[in-house]
Image (tube, rainbow, N blue to C red):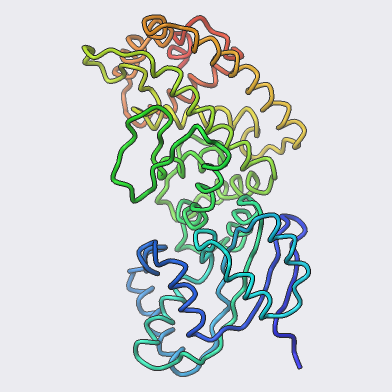
Length: 388
């Protein structure tokens, strides 16, 4: 008799792989509960609409109805360290599934098999396949970066995926951790109607983009590109493989919020310029991208480089030390002094002279690279704005 559960551990990224058999009925009920608050199954990933994809899915539905086996569907699960430590002691399918019953639905994602899940759903409407057996592989980790790395490697070469979509799959877990570790930052969810209006508030979809530019260490990424840029993908995979990566990113976002709050004291109701008041980061995603990418380049190294964890920690500690001094200094300034420090007139003039708006990210990247080179010790931001 074969074992009713197969368990392997990925030592590289500290993940467990659990392979179990479920009936179609049990699986669809599980994912329906998991995604009921995300707009149903269709809310996680759009069904592919190309002619070829439709034909393939129709064929898959027909094959499923005829009793064909489909490749294992892969679920990603983020659990607490306490739960993660229990996994090694599990010996059978029932004890494993009992443990999974208690997992927060926001911590479970389909990372490979959304189209197969859709096909199963459609096939079940046409014919009772509820008792058919399918294989489900659970990738379980206690840290988001472990699951992100495994997901990116798992889907290498699958054209229908773009990097942003892959990150969105585990994004709820990222946001959950970010809220826990960056208490001064408020994240407005992707489907939230509110816009950022207060210091320290950021849109969730913008945080996705900041996560991508930080990992890729590039200020310009084509979010709709279907993985044609394999080098960018590999750069991101390399970043995600490092255990420092996700925690440093959380801290970077926390500093973004700290600077946003620090300069918010500056008010100018009469100005008609684009940048006015202390709204630099809430007004401009390119400014956020420049800030995050500049730090990513300095701490993680240029794309293709391989800084050791020790070197990354050393560089990040230097950034934090310099940034803390600057934050302390800004916090002591009055509104008019913050106005002089920010020098928005120079910024607005230079931004207005740029030949193309697409260069705005590069402009802010160079500005914040200069700030880092100066150890955050500048009399005002003028030399940073003029460095482009």
